[in-house]
Amino acid sequence: MFAISTSAIGALLRQFALEDECTEIAEPAELFDGHINHTYVVGAKLSSGLEKRYLLQRINTFVFQKPAELMENIVRVTEFIRQKLPEGQQTLTVYPAKTGAWYHEDAEGGCWRCYNFVENTYSLQAAGKAEDAYRAAKAFGAFQRLIDGFPIDQLHETIPDFHNTQKRYHALEAAIAADAAGRRHAVEAEIAFARARKADTSCLVDLAAAGKLPLRVTHNDTKLNNVLFDRATNEPVCVVDLDTIMPGLSLYDFGDSLRFLGNTAAEDERDLTKVQFDLPLYEAYKKGYLEEAGAALTEEEIRWLPFSIKLMTYECGMRFLTDYLNGDAYFRIHKPDDNLARCRTQFKLVEKIEEHLLGTNT
Ligand code: GN1
Ligand code: MG
Image 1: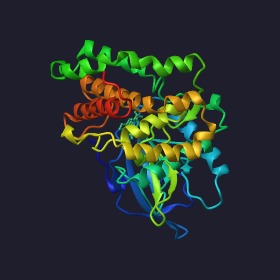
Image 2: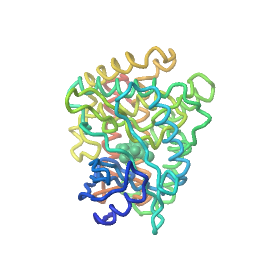
Image 3: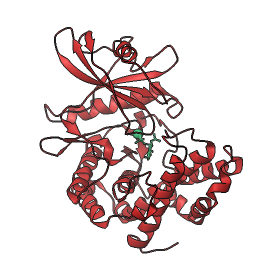
Image 4: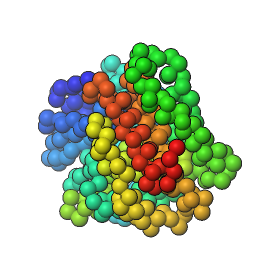
């Protein structure tokens, strides 16, 4: 675990070019939503008297090995989006470090960035009702429209082959062969499950390579908790976690959203009887997404929407399994078997999707 004191967080915040100098810092709160970076909300009083909250994040440089390129993507995308937004609409702003760089490197080599904290919003860990799913779909659909036209060749690939399911499969096979953490014996059933679906891994990558699916600028991590909703109106305010904005397929974003939101259980639920694919939430999400982004989608993209949910769920399950076999190097864990539990919920959900959405049983 990575712990940090209030004074250390204060010292970090002072490395950034905020609206003014900080005179007082409140005790920070750590946010535990994500599996990758460390995130703190910090309240500060500035010399002008302004009181504001900021989001300080320690970038996981095991996952994002080129933080300068990562930040360049985020700054360009947030600037591009800001120009398209109506006046007064809140969105993410990156504060540069006083050195002029987009992140600050601490004495231990830790890389930190600073955003505004988007006030009067909340995020959801699960869609309680169809309305939530519909609104989340509107948010991600609108996001896709907002970044439409962004020059794709200006984007760095922050994690190469991020949603290349075929390569994810090969990474799993490599982890099985290496058995670095000596856990293979405990996951034979999960390995068999993944292997039985190998043929699926190439579907979308082959269509993309053949030019049948267009390459777009995509978010690539469209979990429900990456949407901020307005506390007063419940309408989406903005989409956050822009680390994986890269050239990709619209299907990755659609599929990954429903992987998370369509699951009636939490991602790390141990009781697998709770895992179901929620068809009404799926219908609500699809409706909102097509209303917002449908006009820009090709027939081929629309045809693969249901399959993309299975593929993204299967891929995510393989990634958790790979990390479990590798000894939990990638995803943050809270309990030793978290990655195995996460893999199991994903694979159970794949079964449910096959049965209830795709009408197939592998
Ligand atoms: C990670 O940032 P976070 O924790 O929401 C991961 C996603 C996975 C997700 C599974 C950069 O997202 O790809 O779908 O966990 N992000 C990265 O919960 O690998
Ligand atoms: Mg993320």
